[in-house]
Every structure is written in structure tokens, then in C-alpha cells.
Image 1 (tube, rainbow, N blue to C red):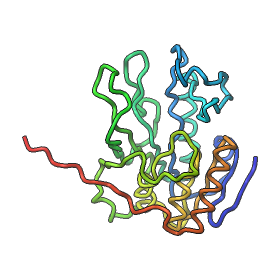
Image 2 (image 1 turned 120 degrees about the horizontal axis):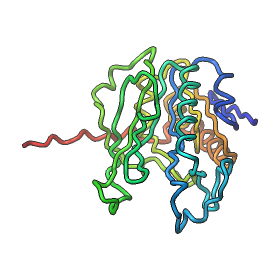
Image 3 (image 1 turned 90 degrees about the vertical axis):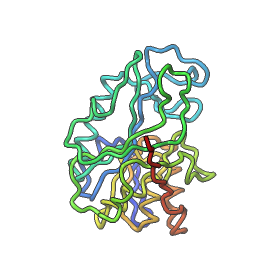
Image 4 (image 1 turned 45 degrees about the horizontal axis):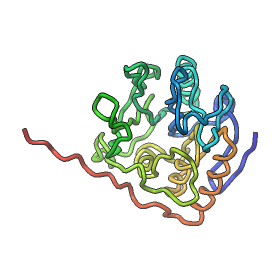
Length: 259
């Protein structure tokens, strides 16, 4: 295990299930886990065919996460992370999406089991699956489990559907294959992260940490892959030198449809 302290950010290289029980209480856990989107029963082609095999092969030759865990094992793992996260925070925000196996949907609430406080639909304003025999998926979710100790009512006017481009807020030195935009996480932080700060158990390239720095919140990030841990360290260190690296959240209200 390796640890770095950058300003008010504590960054830890290691397995979140080992580390979370050792941490003190924070205001919220805010994270986006690997989605396990590559079906192990499929015959991969193209870039997918280059992926390494084995449960611990977290990186492939193209620089992405290994994403081929047995689905039942993945779901058990994700529930374990949720329970461990609720042990250190009163509310846990998870960014996830509906995935498909054998032609049928697996909704995240199928395997995340805890009291649901809130949900947000992230309208990505586009889709990469236009030939899938169904309406092209163009959204993901934020699910909040538990209940925050404090809530900033000023953000209620954002409502529960956010139109945010996945490309917003990317910098030239972020080489993570699937980062979420800082604009997606900033409203979460301003709503329920205060003096005790936030934890991201799947820190990746550190976007949650960058948003916390920009907003003056404490942050603990956990990442198992050293390459992405190093990227997160660089990005968060850069953010400490530039108090406003990103613009305010660019969330557009949904247009009313008149019938």
C-alpha cells in the first residue's frame, strides 16, 4: 500500500475493501465503480480481443480496466463495497448504468441493496449503441443510499435529470479510459459534502478529488491500479495550484413536451 497527502487530499493505493474499514467518518462516499461490461461468455473482437484474462488482470493492452468478472461475483463484490462504504458515510452516491446480458437488462438496483435516498438520471446526450435492437441507451444514474446528515437545499432546483456531456472537463493529461466529467460530480459534493469531506473508493484518475479541491472540501481517494493512482496524484496536485480548474456545472433543464 502506498499513500500520498496533497493538501487536504489523502490518496491511498490499494484495495478499497481492505482500506475502507480503517477510515474515519466522512460526509459522503461518491464514486463510479467498474461496470463489468464485457461479457465473459462472449467472443470478443477488435480492441476487446486484446484484453488480458484472469481476475486480477485489471489492465489491458490498451490501458483500460479488466472488466470481465463473473457477473454473480461482480454483484457480490459491489454489494460488499456498498456496505463497507455505509460504514464510513451516512450517504453513498454511486454512478452506474443498466447493462445487458443475453438480451435482457441488469439494473443496478438489482444488486445494490440498501435504503435508497435519491436518484438522478444522467442524460449523456448521445449513445454508442445504435444497432442494439432497442432504444439506444443514452443515460446513466446516480443512486444515493442511506441518508445524508446535511443537505444543501439550494441545489434542489437542479431536479433529477441532468444533461451533461461526457466530454466536459477533460484535460490533456487525463489518460483514464472512462472518466466521468467534473460537472457530473460537482452538484453531489455541493449538496451533501461539508466539513468531514468525501471518499471515492474507485478513484480512477481523481475527478472526484479534483472537484473536492475546487470546492474546498477534504477528500480521501482509493485506487487499486498504480497507473491511474499516479494520474490522480498529478491532477489533484495541479488542482491545488488552480482553485478553479473547471467551470460551474453545465446542467441544462429538460424541455417540457407539450402533448
